[in-house]
Each structure stands twice: as C-alpha cells, then as structure tokens.
Image 1 (cartoon, rainbow over the protein chains, first blue to last red):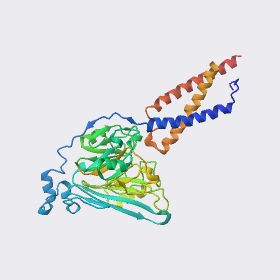
Image 2: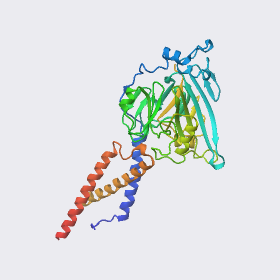
Image 3: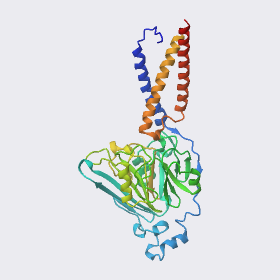
Image 4: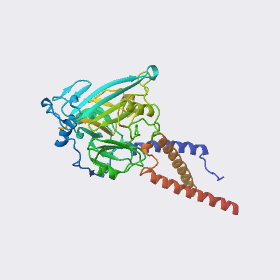
Length: 331
Length: 69
C-alpha cells in the first residue's frame, strides 16, 4: 500500500471523484450534444436522373390509358390513383386533397384496458416525389439544433409532418435530404433510402453502399431503423435495434411509387396507449399493406402534425428534434 | 509537490475510468448517440490509457524501491 501522509481522508477522494464523474458526464453531454454546432456538410448534390419518370409525358400516357377529359388536372403518379386527387384544394380536419397531394388521417385503437394502443395513420398519395421533403431544425444542418415539429411544420408550410431520425444526436449515419448528401458515413443501423423515382428500400448496414445510393438517384436517406419488413414485405421477427420493447413509435411506410404512409404510435400512457414492441409494429405495417417500412426515432420524439397542429398525444408533450419528414405543396 | 501530482493523477485516472463506465452504459441504452466513439471521447480515451500507464509505472517503481530497502 502506498503511504498516505496527508490530512485528506481516503473516502473523501472517492466522494470527490464520484462528484467529478457526474459533473463531467453532464457537462460533456450538454457541451457535445446540446450546444448548437453547425456541422460540415459533404454537400454532394444528387441530380434527378432522366429515368425518374413520374412527370414524363409518355409514362403518363402509359399509366393513364384513356384519360377522362374531367381529369385533365391529373399528372405524374396521380394518374395511377385518380380517385385520390381533386382539381381544387379540399381540406378538412382529417384530410387534404389537391391536384398534387392526397392525405387522409385516421386514428385507430387496438386492444383494450391497460393494453390499449392508439396509433395514427396518414395515408399519403403524391403526384411527384418533391412533394415529400425533409426539414432541418432551424434550417441548419448541425448538432444541438432542435425545433418542435409543430413549429417546423408551420414554418415550412407542411400539410402533414412527422419527426425524422434525429440525425443531430449522432456523429455518424448517412444523412441525405432533399437530394443533398450531408453525411456519407454509415453506422451500425439499418438505412432507409427514398429514390427520386419514388421507390423506397431499406438496407442492413452490410448491404448499404452510399455510392450505389447516389448512383441510383437517392432523394432521401435516414439512419435510425430498424427496417420492419423483409424484402418481400413480410413481418420480421429479429431486428437490428436495442429498443425493441414497448415504446411510442414513428414509422415511414411504402406501398409503391407515389403512395406512402406515416404512422405514429402513442405510448408510455397506460389506459390511453401503451406503445408497441418492434414485433407488433412490424405486424402492423404488414397488415397495413406496406411493401417496406422503416422505424424512425421514437419515444418522446414520436409526433405527427397536420396543418401545424399536433394530432397525436405525444409522451410528455413531445420534444424538439433535429429533423422532420413532411408533405407540402411546392411554391 | 510530487506527492500532490501523484494524487491528482491517481484521482484523474479514477474519474476518467468512471466517465467511460457511464458512457458505456449510456451507449447500451442509446447506441445512436455513440458516447464512446465520438471525436472528443477518442482523445479522452487516449488520455485515460496514458494516465493508466504512468500510474502503473509509478506504482511498480515504488514497489521496486521498497523491495530494495
């Protein structure tokens, strides 16, 4: 044993050390994760390729067949779903239709008593991919920047919006937003890519290659996960995630180019909504008919707005987040 | 002076070890935040390793001198 010839008792060393550990942990968290710091973007612009045919005239003729004269306002993917769009904007509390966008919001419950689950599904049709956009908190790509979804939604003029993958809480993970690669460094999470041609695919960390995504005209990419369905659209039983127990959830679902859904499951509120496990979420997305589905940031972050107003009942009134996914009219 | 320096280094070693234990636990619950692998904790880890070597060498030298006596 080393001699300890001072008047400072030994136990005091350990108490002070423990206090220092607590203080430095909190200080590090605040400094590194909460102090707004702009990040350097890789700034790779992905151009929309000639193969993205949603607004190509010959493609429109191909999918529309004999277009009814009364439906001359239809174009792009709207030609595939003519009954979903309207010539003029028609908006209610739970729906919005225009020549460009169709959104229908439903509130659903399953089970009962203390096991009740409440979830919201926004069924979305868009005529062109650019009506689906990502938003950054305070319009800044950075760490520590956070904004409420309702404020972001109002600022950006969103019809409907959900929280994203909270990229700002991590220093790795692919970030592609609105056709720009901000960060190309993958991490250990599943990746979801939405392409300009309207397809959505999910990849495991081993499968994903950012160069391939760029070459295939990626429009958006998120890193949180996990993917909820296999390549054939069937539910999974194992997930690349440590957050599999009951929680509030946010999901982006895909049916076909032009048809998507946002799903938000409320949770941690016994008697109103207990949340969902990842397995339950996977089964739900398969039941909704999705071909691909991707889990986004959940917990207190899970929030959906319509016309800038919160539609679900987020845990502890939600929290400010670093990014959102939204449907909006183009100016 | 040397005694004070030693005690500072020993306690700093304990603090850094404790910090990394906290970060490891946080990473288990929220791996996306990557507390252990970010660009600042990499330097802290280096400092921790260096301090551990310095303190271990100091201890070994002390033991060696005690044996000689």
